[in-house]
Image 1 (cartoon, rainbow, N blue to C red):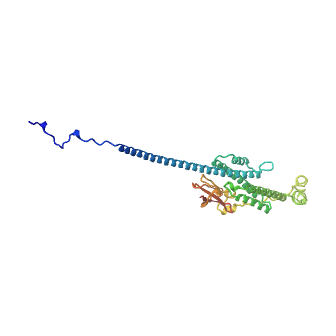
Image 2 (cartoon, one colour):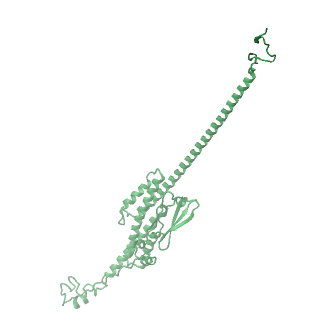
Image 3 (tube, rainbow, N blue to C red):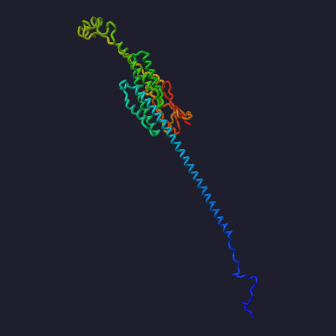
Length: 357
């Protein structure tokens, strides 16, 4: 008798223990995976290396560009400093010539001037300067002091012209021309003052000649005529007519002691002529404005963007300003700029501005 355990299993039945095992990895497969991993690693390393190389090259290029920029800036600053020092030295030489023109053989000032201040700014010009700003500040201070001295000299020349009414026309014309030459000379920048000492010497010499001529004419006008008839107590006025026996006697009018009886005083000198620029200033609308009468120059206040006109590349006209006699023009340009002062025949200055390329 058969049981369940005796039932034969189907022929195609496969037991779990009889399932085929997965094929084992072959050595060639393992090598291929290793090679792929190594290739990926190498590729990543190459990419990273390339990125690092690019970054290194860029960093080097930036460093080189920065070094070139620093070098160019240093060269430009050195050139600016050199130009500023040269300008200061030239102005110092000009002021030395002016100082020599304003002292006599004993070294004493020929006018009432405080020359110590001018000597002080001249010494500051030749001191060692380490920056362009230092040199320029010394130059601007020297220009301001030199302008002050020149205004005093011009004012003295005008006073001399007004006080030599008895001088000859030639002497007065020579003095007036000398004053005009010094007044109309350019102002404002250090290069404007070249040969200013020669104009000063010409004015001082013309003033001396005119004053001497005036003094001689005054002596002649107040002297008694030859023979002494009417002025100081001679025969006619002193003894017989006015001062002789009747009024003066021997004491006051007889010509022995005082010699003045009945004397007619010489006429007073004529009043000084009007200021030579009075009519001109009135016609210009300035009337008796002292700045116009003294023909004071025009000034310009510069800033850090200012460039000397001699160093201005391709200057282009950029407007003008006429601040009036003794006036100051204060532009606020932030781009490189320069200027020139043009003076009219009246001495009125117009500032012409330029933009530098």
